[in-house]
Amino acid sequence: MDEVLKVANSMGAWLTAAPIVIIALVQVLLYYRQIYHAADAVNLTREQLSQAFRTGMVTSIGPVVAIFIIMVGLMSVIGAPMAWMRLAVIGAAPTELTAATLGADAMGVKFGGEGYTLQVMAVSWWTMAINGVGWLLLVGLFAHKLEDVREKVGGGDTKWLGILSTAAMIGVFGYLNSRNLTAVSGPLVAAVTGAVSMVLLLQVAKKMPQIKEYTLGIAMLIGMFAAMFY
Image (cartoon, rainbow, N blue to C red; front, side, top):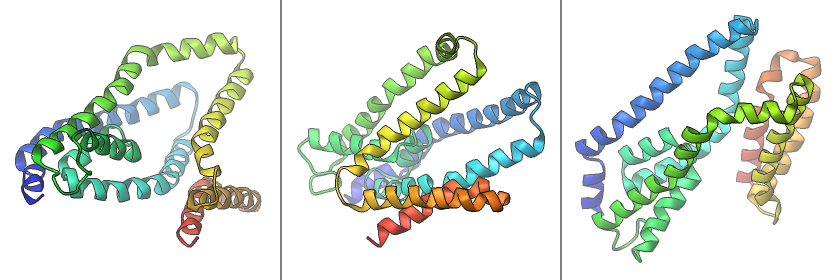
């Protein structure tokens, strides 16, 4: 395993991973610039943009903590460069961990266990890469068509489009959260506690509007801590 980590954390691995991460950072800056252009087009003020950015930063705390924990586990097996690169591109830590584990399983070896050689690590790397190809192809080929589809479904009615978009987000998050509600466990405690906390925090926010943008992030943290003590 020491030989595996020596190669996984070598300068060559860092140089291989760095360009992908740099591209992701450039995309972030381009999106950031485009946001300001779009804001001017729809008459959003700089204060509103700053509030939106703060809300996004606070809301991301919960997911980032979970991703960081899994990333540390990945780093200890496949090396820091590959873990850094995969999560910079995809960001779905459980998916990346599953892909790396499936790669090891395909070679008849436990992920990070005895017999996890350089060849097995290479299979884990390839499995993670192939796992992300479908997402990238889908975005590249069809993302630019989604707005046209949304316009056709909404019929040009801005109110209906707003309802449609909100319903879609509720459906997606409901589906993702449904797996936590099948048995009494830590995830169920986190989901229920977070939901109750969110309702209560929204009531508090009516009297204290300054905390409204932080309510989701706080509710997520409360849910996480409740699950830890379950």
